[in-house]
Amino acid sequence: MKKYKKLLMVAPLACMLGTGVVTFPTASHADAAPVASVVNDSFGQGSTYSTENITQALFVRLRSGIEASPELRNKFKIADDERIQHEQNETIENGTKYPATNYGLRDQLSKVTASSTGTNITVNPTTVTEVEAGKIELLSYRNSTPITQKQFTTEKSMKRIDTVTATNQYGFKLGFESSTNFKVNALVAQAEQSFKASAEFNFSHTDTNTATNEETVTFKAQEVLAAPGGTTNYFTRVGKAKFSGSFQTDAALTDLKLKLPIVKKDNNQTVVHTEEVTLTSQDIYTIFKNTPYIPLPAYLSFDDNGKKVLVKNVTFSYTGEMGYNTSAQAEFIPFDQDKPKQTMSYEKYETKTQDKSL
Image 1: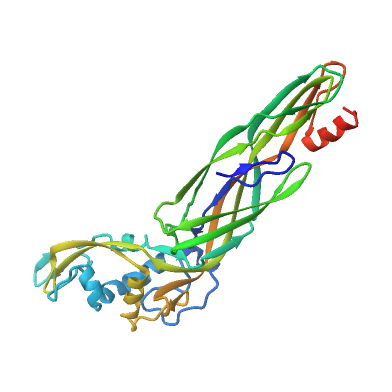
Image 2: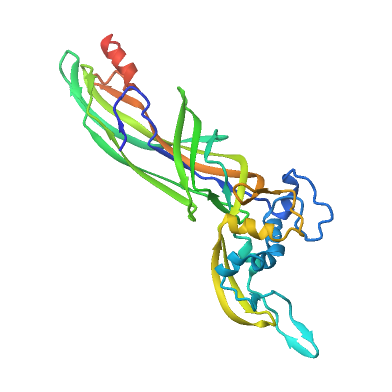
């Protein structure tokens, strides 16, 4: 639990949650990714990273890459006389019609996760919007005496829940390898002042695209001044900063969930068994390495030390909210109805009370 102890200062952030989202362009947006062309692209992998192109790069390698690996054959329980079923259209051979076989392999491959390889990322949002989230009443005191009184605010606590959801219009899933520390520095502009807000949070390896953080913030009782001749209300405003931006980093292909039908080598029609396996980044690396006759497209590279296939310079977009409270404020309502009500920072109120200028 974090406690906010000073009324005269901007309290520390309760929490901010942001999210990296892999934004691979579709094939129609291919010009947005400035990478070199693939010469003689007979495998149709394209020259830029996109959902379709990375799906194709996996599709042309998958069966051969798995079947050439004893470890992956074991994962899918493929016996020596078995293989992965080949998707094909309806065929006619020697007068015999064979129905089409289609188990949605391309659709499965399109759901591969691209995980940011950075473990410490600091970003500066390009858009920050302040949102008023209410206020916490700390004290209301009616001072009918001719002298300034000292009073104590009431200790109060509030529960702050911050939630962020990652969205990805291109269909690729968000991922962060292992544990990633993500720091956001934001400039929150207000009418009277601007201040910097920052927060750190941790992305762990997860399938969900929504993160929620809950925290209780306590405003401790503190001594304040109460001017004579009126009622003073003390409170602190609570706000949130909505922010968004993007950054670029390499991303590893990982967490590919596959459900593959296994058939005998001499019979592509009859499924012997079906296996469901989640391929790791090292498994995907093995598949690519087992198919060296297929050229690696320019938007991919090998991390041979980490045994990963990397997508180069992927743009991650993030959105989120960070909670904060402004400095404490005071509202003075004079008993003399001819005098106006005044609302100001507590610091200014304290000065006016001391020099009797309210």
